[in-house]
Image (cartoon, rainbow, N blue to C red; front, side, top):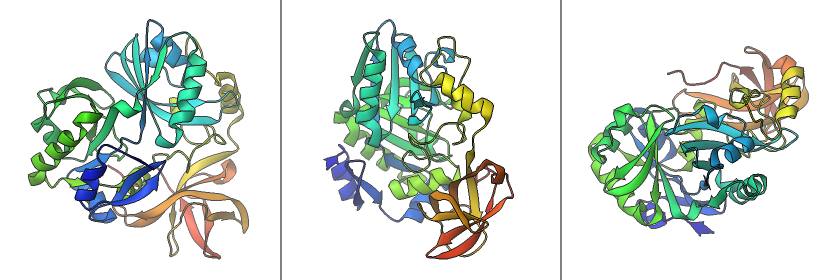
Length: 360
């Protein structure tokens, strides 16, 4: 089991460690709901260094990276990032990603922890000799600072002017005296930043954030709160809601597919055909109207027949309801459609609702 450079800090803070994507990671510290509320109302810190970073460099870096992903990196300015997907020729999602454009000669792509080796091998093979493709995951630690008080906390520790860094833009600077890539991105639905700092600097930056943000109510947060926070905003989780057996259109990610990209991308023709025909199923947000909590893999029933499974589910601390995501046949996927989730052998009523669950 691998450990992130912040492992000792998690243990010292009372983190309860669990295996996740080959790493020993904190699932919670003070408690899931407490940490969830800290992010919604104040500020929370997450160690997300289990995520991977792949760097494309060289004169053809931007073109090579752009051919591998569905969104259009050519349309980004230097210093801008975007959410995107990487698909196979059959349109199946290899991973969902965030791409950071430094310049036409340098692009960084952040990949999911469980897909790091797979993604790197795919990127390297597809790029060929067009540019240098390097897995730099072990060199960086990623720390997410999320919540309405995140900008105030981060600004205390950097001379970079964060007011000018819009959502999905980034700058290079220093945080707590250490070199960092500072991106206004996140996975919680709140304002905030994600830093990429050299592994050797991680502990110093983490401790500085905790100490400097004490008066703001900062809390270290685990994977449990990260999951409930992202689910309230209907953000997909790879391995649960999306995978190689799902395509962007049925997953509600058609907005990251740019079919008219000048140089095209892998899987483009298949995705165009899927879009034209319309997906046969759709990933929908739902609330239980009966008692219980929907969990991953619970059967989903329409007219008593199983049509799929819950992909993600929890009791949403901020919405106060049992919520989840599931694939339903397109004909039954409209807002207001009713179905049932089988919980411990009993069918419980559910209804398709508008995304996201939490309205800002």
